[in-house]
Image (tube, rainbow, N blue to C red; front, side):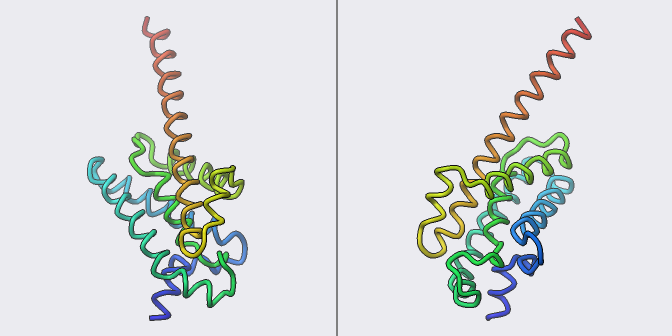
Length: 168
């Protein structure tokens, strides 16, 4: 059971990356998102990414106490399943015309918000137990998702304007 908790907490051992384990865990989640976006049809891909986000949150709940005891910290850097959950939320329901660019942008946005921790995200991190481990990452994922959607709207409006001037 401890090996399962370790694999879960460290998101398949990416949490043991010597540099930036959180980024390593989020990068694996981003690659999984990219595979889903490339291989699964649009209506179903949203359900798959949503299910992955839910499973990641359940993984945090399942492995948090073990990780806290094993690494002797309230939010151990080796526990990166929470970063995976945040990355999955970042890509949830994002319309995807260019998967590689959108996943890359989503990854960058998520890591910026997860590392910078603007005010509401920082408060979530202070909660006890598994909630403090995962809620800040979910909040960073929601914020990254919103910014990604706004960027897509702006990009689409710009392209539509250029097309209108070119055609008209």
